[in-house]
Every structure is written in structure tokens, then in C-alpha cells.
Length: 155
Image (cartoon, rainbow, N blue to C red; front, side, top):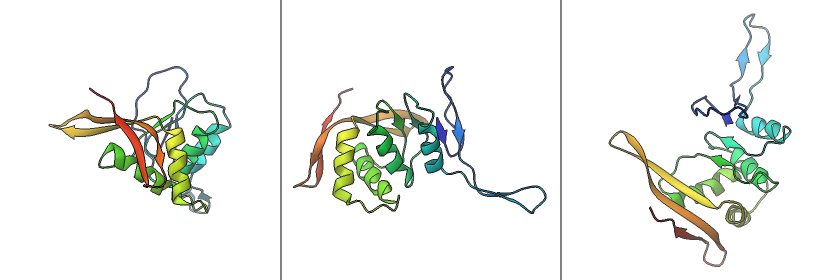
């Protein structure tokens, strides 16, 4: 499990928790402790050969690293992100992937997403509680029309 701030609580014997940190100055004030980013942690986690990845919140270039991990045998992984709908989350994932500063066309990233993501679940807060308000099954990406082919998953 990889998070910026420890928020997810998963009680399972085979879960390893990794937490990002900001750059810090040690107590003597003379030595800098370098930052450890979510991107760093995704790459380090892959060296442990996990069956699944759980990334607490994707909000930058680590979105590309998540897609890359899904493309190399880590299916069944899960992540969260902020978006306004399940469909908008797919667009946001593509946009966040471009923040990895790699020279990859947006349409190529959209195609990768359609190949790698099976289900998007949108959870919203209502009356102080979180509830699933939408779930989509992703079937592909229509490059000509520039849109994802999805099917709603009924309640």
C-alpha cells in the first residue's frame, strides 16, 4: 500500500505500507533528508514483486507509473483519485499520466487506459456518508471519436 499520508486501513498479514515524505532538514540543521515521492515508492514497490498495488491517491505523474505497473502483470490493483464522475476519472487519469513528463501522446495514454482499466467506481459523499453512486465497466477507447466505450454496472 502506497500513500502520501496514511489514511487507508487494511488489516491483512501480507500488506506492506509505504508512505511518501517531503524533503526534510535533520535535527542538526546541516543535512538534508531527501523527499520520497509516490513515484519513487511505486518503482521501489515493484522490486518487491507484489501481487497487487494499492495506491492511496493518484494526483501526479505516478498515474503513469500505475499504468505501467498494470501493464506488467499487476492486474487487480486499485487506486483512488479525485474526479467529478466515473467517466471524468478516466480523462483525469490520462491527464495525470502526462505529468510524468514523458513524450507520450494523449491518445496513446487513453488507449493504454482502455486496455488496462476494467472498472471505475465513483463514490460521493451524501449526508456525511460515502456511497457508490456510479460504476462503469470499461470496454475500450474509440480513437476516431475520442471517447471511452463504457457500460454502466447496475446496482
